Length: 168
Image (cartoon, rainbow, N blue to C red; front, side, top):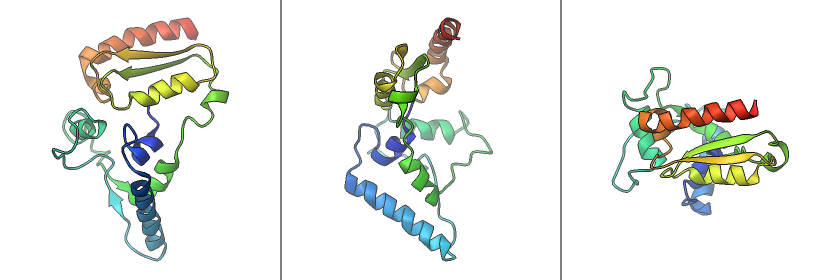
């Protein structure tokens, strides 16, 4: 489970400063204004086109590049293109806003122990209103590993089966 708004605003582990967040939001707003005045659409990617040594090897962005931009997970209908102005919605999206009031159903979050996004699953499980909330951790897996690596996916499926049998 990922809070995609926080991930794109702050980065995993909240590494993006408020000043940098505001600068990006200003860039997005400026692009929206420019388009309203007739400028060409601003296009960007949702995962980095290029990887450099400053990016942690196990980060979701580096592994997202490996998944979404290679034969491993690339699809012709997902060309890694996004309108820059769309980030105004992404950056302000907050999926956990009412989780402490409205998520009363049984809730299972699954995360890899090496995922730089595990903090979002921990947060969701802790905040969910119900009394049947669980975080199931897959030892050694990153966020993207859980997409398609059999060693990890095969650990998820039995857990999902038992969860659904118990709660549906």
